[in-house]
Length: 486
Image 1 (tube, rainbow, N blue to C red):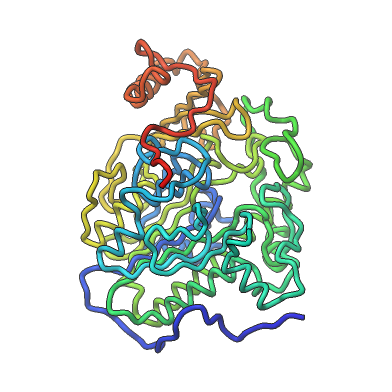
Image 2 (cartoon, one colour):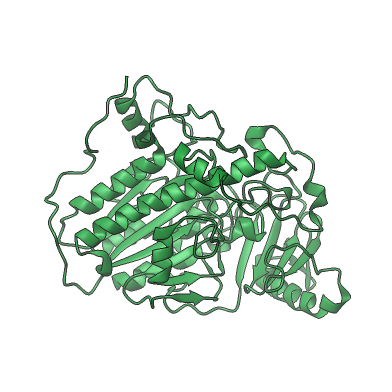
């Protein structure tokens, strides 16, 4: 039996009045998805339907070279939380976000007078750690529940459909397969997150501005959109995976379907996965449209600074790779959009930017100074020549690297083997041709190698010795800056 309530009563009710505050500091709306590629919005890929993200891009700034410096879930979220680079927040790969940092986005914005609320996936430890949020409603899909923790989404699901299984689609959290959501659409976690966020905006009536984090757990697998959206993309000709001349070593299958990270899959399975992935993104876009509509109805849209981005991308079969943690564009590049006060409409910015830039952007809008220096910059004024990327051992000892890119070239140093790759993203955006062994590109390779040496030299002789990059066959998961347990 399914019991459906007419509305989610998750926030204290307040009159849904029209309101337009005359204040100098805007509301702050941070919308993020999980595992969404940088090329997966309609503004860049016309085969995808994302009219609401396209609107944000059209009415604001789209950053063409936005990256996740450490492209897996938790280190990416540490950068978001702190405004710091991987070395300074301490997470060089996938591990637990520390319980507390000296500066944390929800806490410092609360200190600045903002009412702070987080809805959706946080991926923190402990799972109820607030990091300063005044309110949180959690969808920690894919993470373990225990007698001490049950996500708000799972509790709500049980109240609505006590006889149904929220995992009925049968696709795992690291699976490459796609399929339709097998339950009523309103029970989907993407819809739940959209409902909760829409209700927050509709009911918000505090005198102070808000900081709202809306964090969708998709399009991270399971790729399970509503059937109507899966069907839409199955009827379209979507881009096929790209495979570089260097990627043959990833052709063999790495493991079982629910834990695969490389392998050449049957074409029909890849098409289904990509159709379901696209449908998951469009479903998120529909929820974002509801948020924009609510802000417009309440005359709050133009007094709200909106940032949209993802924590990292998804290979979805490119170069025979799956999931994330790689230096390649499909994994490391993300969508990044800014709309609102101070953001010029229709600008496509080619500056390399990163998740560490989100907190400084919000602090500038909130007119709040950080008590410590941050590594990120305000996205409205950002200027930098290149951005650094890295990831400690993940899936395999061979997947362990440091990289630099300015959006034109990308240099990758594979730390376990001491091998290099060089790509010209201007002429080869899909990274099909590794230029590192081409004599004609030796000067460019030397330039980027010297930049990497300079970047890593401060870390000591495990990284750079006698002016040379040092192979790192062993994991170095945390830097000395990683906060000790409380």
